[in-house]
Length: 364
Ligand code: KG4
Ligand code: ZN
Image (cartoon, rainbow, N blue to C red; front, top):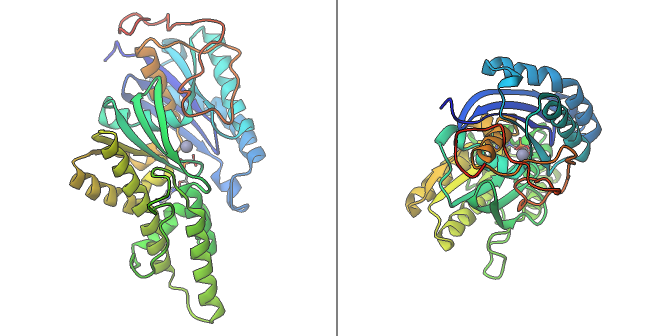
């Protein structure tokens, strides 16, 4: 294990300043400073507020992660950072910090994809990712099915949401029900007291002519809002728990159905679920049930690793070093719409290899 690469990962794509330290597939530290409370009164993340909070939190969070891991910056084999996708200003803070650390310490820099990091984090809990693995990524910003042939170089999008992300739908429905922000955890909690079959909400894009692996949650959100509105207008009480449970059932039904279908159609027998919505208790239970029935092995990281964090970035960075993948240039820029197919941002001027590392193969 001492031979496995030691990597620090920085994540600032949204409202969490995450810094993780990983050795190979072992999590050594996961420090997170969140600005979520500063956004709550706006009902969503305010980019400018997020950027400023990242700037303030960066150095102390890096220090905290190194302390937690019991290593010094000089021990590191590389610095990994989320290069995109995400909020441009927020990403910029992380990328600038990572470049400064890499330059000052003389360590290779790895600009990596946020979505691939969400997949790779599963290694910290369940060991090396089987390849291929199907990944269902569900968060406040994305809902995608990704066929992962090689976590460091080959991630293929099969489908994604055409409107709202799954987490966004949770947040909007929570607002309609007056439950606060972020909506996912509180809807999850309320739903436990409710009947998931009380109301039959629509299952988006599940018709015979619909794209098989794309998602749509905007119609569902509107259906919930309309249903609640009608009750209120009629002067009736809104059965909040039943609405929450029925809405959650509609989301998880579609997500798991399409994920299992994608596995079957592609002959993939491993599914991982990541992103903030993977913390949802009903999604976890339903996925377990349906995967078991389909003979698919399921990996869902614990909730703390599903939401945005630096450890996931470090996990992917460590895998890049281990496999001798090219490092990024020191003039790496953040790309708010980095496509998921770009797992990392290699140096455009030529290969910079993970020279620091001596042991593990992969061609370094
Ligand atoms: O991955 P994440 O932390 O940040 C993004 O990249 O968006 O995901 C945050 C999203 C929010 O929309 C939040 O409401 C949702 O994940 N979420 C949940 C749960 N916990 C967080 N959604 C459903 N059930 C949960 N238990
Ligand atoms: Zn995320």
